[in-house]
Image (tube, rainbow, N blue to C red; front, side, top):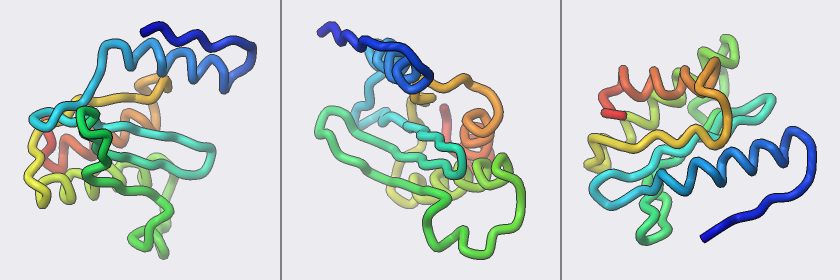
Length: 123
């Protein structure tokens, strides 16, 4: 399956990189996919089983866990990783495939992965 994304700009380039990554990465029931979505203000992490097309666990800086959070965006991203690791372990998930969503593995995206590792998930 070939996906052709045409156009110029940052968002189009991000979609193109993510489509290129998704050719090689997919989640299974045994090894689901940890997807990180990054915006200027928030981070969202989801663990997805691609065979069923179901989100198993999700965590975000938009949830009530972050209502009184004081810290940088990178610290918030790390906390998202730790919280999703805890939720994943409660759901019986111990290992995942990391999908950076077309973003560089740097900064807040790397902080989510680091937090997930510290929380006990194997990436």
